[in-house]
Image 1 (cartoon, rainbow, N blue to C red):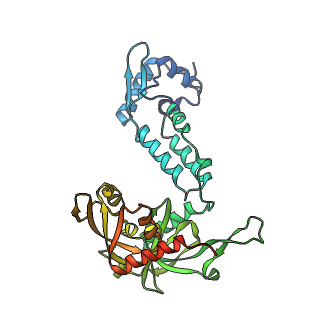
Image 2: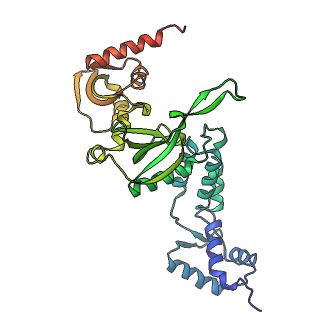
Image 3: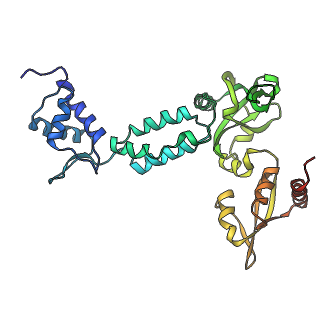
Length: 335
């Protein structure tokens, strides 16, 4: 029998068949392997399949054989286990900064890392359409551009916008560029993910301070041939995780050390927010005290308020007074 044009590709197609159709719960018999190869116009004998599988095993592919009536050949391990792939899918689904279109594209690529039966299991938990997603398709590429700028140590320019009401427009909501559309020029130092949004942390030369910008609200990002500035602020002491712990909802404010008195049952809440390295002091059998550094802002006060009195600000006095004023503003009638 003359060899088909695909005969030289037999080993590659055998690998493809095993990767796509087998796992520990779905095994392929010798007859199924031969039939699958025939669909690619490849005719093989059992003996050649034995040697091909041995070659794949020598290459590092984890092909196993389970003997018995329900046995067969299968891929025993992959670069990603199914629970890990589900975790990645969940992260993509929950990420507001990734558009619905890009989410579906990424999930489809993740499915290719599993067998077809496993991919079907992943597909069952995909609910992207009902999630709140950004409409800025460019954010995916913005992140790549910003990573390049950070690794290259150069400055960037960009336009920054916010959403504004405009009842003269058909949908009443439109983009409004800050600084009347003028370019921002900053030195990018880090990217962080907080409250389901990506933020760029950068040095602002106009104020000589650390600033952050929501990546999905940045447009027309360009790298410029100018060395990054702000080393003094970012060298040694700056930690993105510490920064996001201090800045509630990524709203800036004056950084202060605040003393809190908390009910003991809220130790988990405090630890989740401020990290494990806390100096906790006993106040009485039901309360503990802790000093934390925060950016004092209405968002910080809202977080305290949302804990229903179980966490209270004790010091400094001006922060406690500002919190009381915020509570009064909450209860003031709308005029």
